[in-house]
Image (cartoon, rainbow, N blue to C red):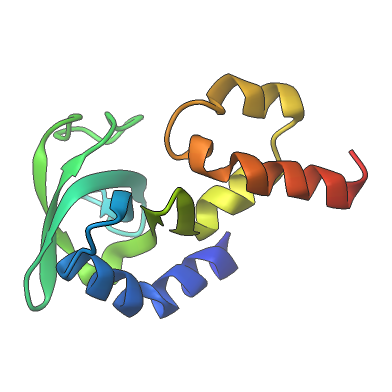
Length: 140
């Protein structure tokens, strides 16, 4: 997972450029961000945000889910985000997902039955062909 986060951070400038000047073909996008616990910043939760707007050194976005245990945040809330807390990002153009390094790592571990449960929902729906290819390469 650490390698996937490093790759997401390494390529985030490209991702940011696409979202800052979106092409008409950007169909969906999201940024995964680490939200630290107020009393212990070394621990926290990674959550997805969308409707991202960029400033020079930060961004704002809307939380896509409720946290599992971190208090004070809720789905649909607008949040200010520090660029150094980004742990992944994706955008979809022409039906193809770009980025999504942690997503691919997680979905690679799914059984066909697990993937079938989320296959029609974003962002998994954009990775259905990729997932099938992964299965074929594994001989499954």
